[in-house]
Image 1 (spheres, rainbow, N blue to C red):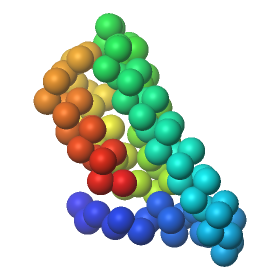
Image 2: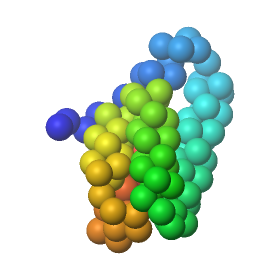
Image 3: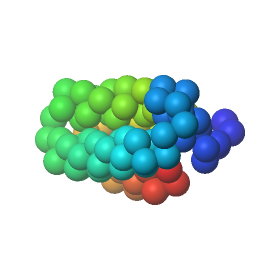
Amino acid sequence: MAYDPGAIDATLAAAVGDEPALIAELREAFLDSTQRALAALTLAETGDAWTAGAWRLKGLAASFGAVRLMAVADEAAAMPAGDLAMLRKLKRAVERL
């Protein structure tokens, strides 16, 4: 799967036009949301909470065109709650945004 570092900005520009300040604000809100979703996954104690958190992260990624994060979050949904290797993989995917 290809990684396009400009996909998020392109998605935002398509939604709001040529408004660099608004794009930057929305991008920051997206990154904050991904951090909260990762925190929820880290704290998930049940399989249901883990799966819901992974789907939340996948939906968030899909909304902003973050294809790689979307794929990793989808993969995470099938893993057991608290899978440390998957959490590391998710964190790397978020860091690449």
